[in-house]
Amino acid sequence: MTADEIYFWWAVWLVIATVIVIATAALLIAVVMAAQRILRTARVGLAVVGEIEQNTKAIWQLNDSHKVAEGLLSGAEAILGNAGAIADALAATEEKRVA
Image 1 (cartoon, rainbow, N blue to C red):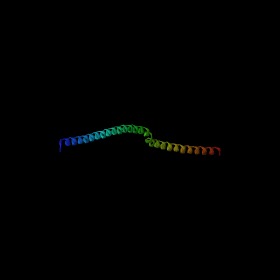
Image 2 (cartoon, rainbow, N blue to C red; image 1 turned 30 degrees about the vertical axis):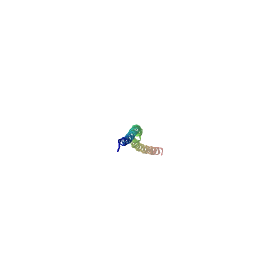
Image 3 (spheres, helix red, strand yellow; image 1 turned 180 degrees about the horizontal axis):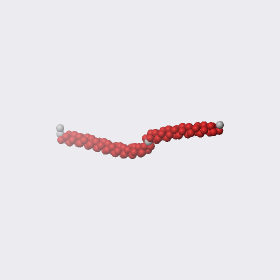
Image 4 (cartoon, rainbow, N blue to C red; image 1 turned 120 degrees about the vertical axis):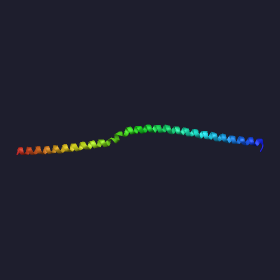
């Protein structure tokens, strides 16, 4: 192999190595940029999750409100029953008094 052939192949492999290094660097830069986009999107998503949590706290408290409403309903039904008994007793007393 002559010196010119050695220099030729050395230059060819140097060009190939340079292309590989440039391609690797380009891919690495693309990966870093994609990671930054993912990070930005994750931060926005995390902020949205926080807002969703704040907006849905009232929904989770509906069960407590339902239990309180059931208690109020049973109290109102008891009052209605007592008021009916009182009304019946007054009507019976009124009928006895008129008769």
